[in-house]
Length: 461
Image 1 (cartoon, rainbow, N blue to C red):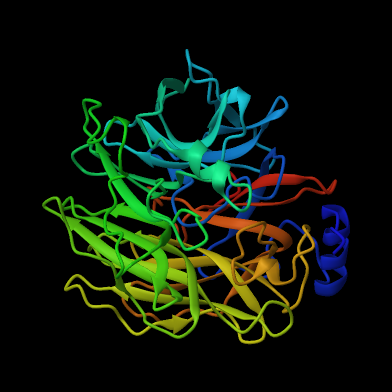
Image 2: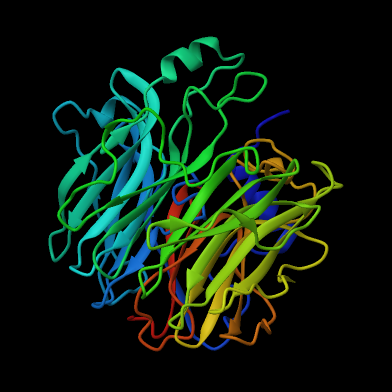
């Protein structure tokens, strides 16, 4: 199948939808919405995927964004800083990951990162990728001090899972994935909580491919990791016959220090959104949050001030192509541990994926990527490769919101007519704004991919 260029895709999207503007084609309910282009990026997956935090706002209103793009000739990771007040045409600065001693990151592509803010103002980052001389993806960690001149204070591979070479040598298909898709959060006591999609040489399917499972580790405020060095087995939360494989975790920590973990995993052969809680160092086990016969993937979540957990995910049925149907669903976990009945929030007659969830003091907001059934992305995939939708997910950015606790969502708005990808709401103070700030990737006027920032409020903030 022919691959469509991004410029051609942009022109086709404009013909279909009547607009290729970078400004919203409908007003955001309850706010004056503004947006700007922050920086060019190498591809539309610069902030993908949407299951964990890429975007923070601190008490001064400064935006911090984890981005994956090319620096020189190699894909690498940067921490973007966009200082307040935000305005159209503003400049953004980037602090890049650097080689340190034996960790030559510049020798291999790095993959997308997640970030979290600590009580002391530092920013913690986790990502995955290879290094010079070692293609296997391992989890990487960095800590940044912030201020007028952010600094990369620490970068490391805190632990590693050996055995990749033997598995890759005997694999029926080439593989490079091993440890991947980390999610990171920092608790009120400064403890870093890390969850990731782990593999090892021993848990394999019948064709010899390693089965993924969600592993979990912590780092104290003093820098001590709960696991370190070479691991004989990743510290899986639950990886057994009841839950044989899990992918792409999200991790959140509430004000009591309880850890909430979500992923998608196989339940009787069907991918389902699963949830587990870590309290007093004990894991509850995985349980589906909204059991269904349909394929569920790509969960995103946010905690409100009362400790309620707001979750959105992609749920799909049918086959790839024009018969595929994928939609965004939402549910809330109340403080008593009960899950509310799931609600479809994307429109009938369109497909949707890669949601993001954000909260303010008064509302919960969900944004996602939507497209006409059967549409091709820039990689020539119908319906963005449904059901796996693991590659580029492109379409228009849509969003909606609901007052906290009501689950009555406003009519959706189109934030970007597309082609655009991977919206991500900010975590942090909203200073009374009706919506958190939002970042996403889209084409700039010249047809090249770029990182975009949107916010509620005056044009100077």
